[in-house]
Image 1: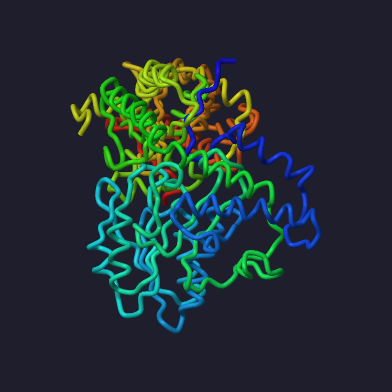
Image 2: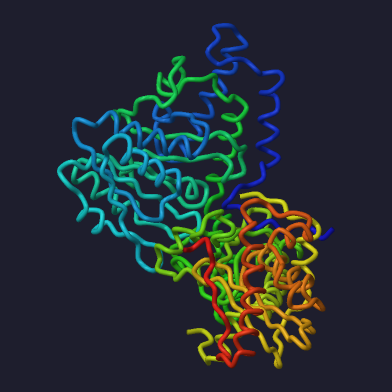
Length: 397
Length: 140
């Protein structure tokens, strides 16, 4: 079997050996319940404190502002539902964007349906950007929360978080950012960015799955989603995922420690892949902003072919990617992000997302450049749409 | 969305049978639409009531390609009457199963064949050369 070239790091990453190494003893020797009074418990508690400090440092926050959760989706739910509840007397209007992750969008829909919230879903431009001006124009007297993702998981576009944060601050409105794809990829500072709430999760930056955090600025009220014991300052009950937290702490330290170096390397490889594919494959386009994008994100649409069959063929050649086609999303519509940037359905169906990682080599990139064009050609030769375009002289239109 | 395709499905995906066009087709059927993400176009050459040759082109997922490939195999060399009786269930069975969410692809394949056969009849009756277009049921 050919070596697998994993290019789906936006979906999840492998756990780095250094991360796994620090985690393991917390399953066996240092296994205590951090709430226990005895030495075994105190030992565990210390480890959690250390991880909390590491996470706070990574985003410019204070340790007591970090609340551990089961991952990005839980953090998003906690932020939105918590603010909606705690600030209900102040208002019920939330501003977000059309390209958020489903953990934000579906929670907003739930709040509309079940908590009487009103939600404005701001449209984005053709490159996936929303502006601070748009946000400001949408503010109403009853707005209690603005939630805009720092970086989009599908097309990689980076949003103007600092500018939006400034607008939020000016109007005294809480600002949450889903930074799940951004932490470990671009510099994050909650004070510079005027962020009040931030979601992150370990498995996007070489930590384990099932553990994340919600940054909650001091003074911001976020009631519990999960009731029970007093863990996380009474904000999130449940015996802490000790090994997971230790892993999260180590992973965030590693990721943010050499951020500039690793992102420069990724950008170089990413750009080689983008430029090379656009050059070699006709009737293709890049989705998302060309430069204000995640260092590891490549997202293209290839006309006249469909995403799932593209992924299957790539998988046959040992290349692992993902797509925004309807078939891969399990619905009739292709990715809401691709539709939001204005792509017609049939173009959005032919999308491919490749996201690089720390283990991706130049040889991997070269292999994709050598292999993908042939696959697209084969699928086009089977496609009635390609045929039709040739017959009608509308190729590329 | 994880999903397992049977070996048979993967075989028909990797090595689809009867891909292409027929210059001298006397029945052409096209179903589905680009908006849904599935289009199948079937070309048949009928002689003496028998489907002498059949080719297809498909825009769609693994199941779409595999079901169209299998459908062409199932009708090639058959009489028109037999081919007209093709069901999507037969296609699914021949492929040794499809994930539930992909069953609609087999329905599309059945409809594409039937559209081609209907077009043949239309042409025989002096009708137009236009391919019969049936729309994907999931969208309507």
